[in-house]
Length: 139
Image (cartoon, rainbow, N blue to C red; front, side):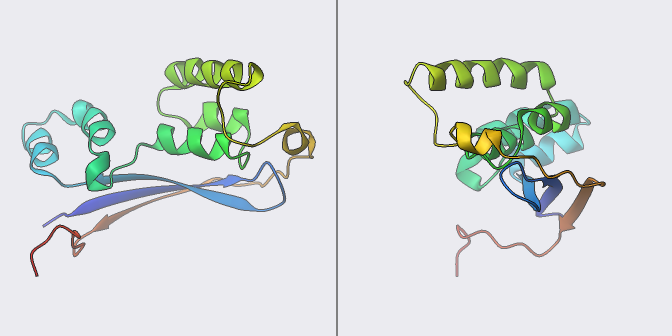
């Protein structure tokens, strides 16, 4: 039985040479299983967004987190996101808050000014996990 799916992107780092991994994690909850069974897979992203308490993470949320830490560029966030329009709006909101000094985490201009290391390939790996055990499981 499918327990979880982890999708990984390897992106060029913005702050120094190398790559940083970005993940999307979907746990097979009863709700996700019902969406798959009913062929309503277009709604799975919504369940991933609301499933943080189960350890689920959306790719777009993870990309935004890595951008706010100064690890990846704005361009990478937009081009690799699943919903570029929504992500661009969130980026504008984040950057405005940071410019006004009311929000944002680190990642100052020194990081942005460093030369970006470019790597040739983007790697995306999707791995179904068949024997994942939740920390909520009874022992």
